[in-house]
Image (cartoon, rainbow, N blue to C red; front, side):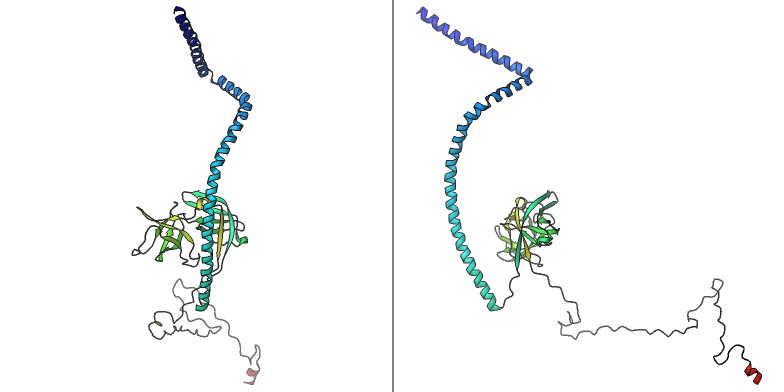
Length: 348
């Protein structure tokens, strides 16, 4: 028994001694690391450099296993995404067929009714090469200019909706003011109801809706499109949906003007017709059934003929400050009498 107890106690003491030495060594290393941090950093860097090949070898199977496990999850995700895209593609084909049929029907109705056809609408694809997002300036720069057919006032759209308008066009580049800019004002139509309003940018992702009828019934989710008023923009360009907030009516934009890369510049060929010159048949006399007023006659004053050699009829000032009177011209003899002719005197 005694020998067994002694051996057990000796075993415990031999185990506690290395632990104590390890604790002392750790404290010494900690103090030395605080006193000489540069030395320990160099040592750590040297150990890392020596161990880097081993770490690469050990890391290779770990990375392969991680990619394989992630690939299994991506496989199921891709399968689900592929199934969803196939269903969406089928629905889009149905809508495309319906849209084609409706477009042909509308054109046939317009032909029967002798309706005015819609103006031609072509587009130019451009790429964004610069952005300026300042507190009072939200613009982008495109790599297309006048030589590509870009003109100020044209609409700029992407795959989701309208993002802005061209306001400055050079030979090879052009500047676009975004619809979120503080200086942007676009006439829009709220559907359903065809309520006219103005989309006003305020340098925020959701522009304001202003100048709409107070009697209009608006609800969140209404569609906002361009109205085409003024003839600068085509009607029906998608802008966003209506939001009701505590500060008023906002528009949630379908497009993201700040993160767009490729855009289309729409060439809307609808020139504004110049107003006719005013005439005597304009309102209100012609509309009231009254005869038009005769044009006013201008009285022409005939100036009296001017006789050469006679003084004018203007009154000459008199007094001390009056200018001297012009000298009288010498009297010329008659045509039938020349100077020095004394034949008549001799006859007398």
